[in-house]
Image 1 (cartoon, rainbow, N blue to C red):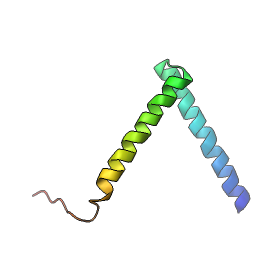
Image 2 (cartoon, helix red, strand yellow; image 1 turned 135 degrees about the horizontal axis):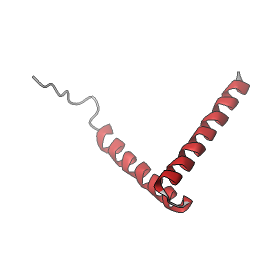
Image 3 (cartoon, rainbow, N blue to C red; image 1 turned 120 degrees about the vertical axis):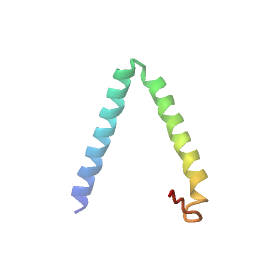
Length: 64
């Protein structure tokens, strides 16, 4: 079972690398610029997660 998990991790890593490469090509940017953009996206999602995390389960929005 561990071998299958290892292969799945390898495949996921390859898919991620291909995704970053195609993103870089589509944006016509060098690797450093794309890296910075991805870091900014990660920071933004972390900020959203931390802002939402404290409110999860406290309120229910119901639109009528």
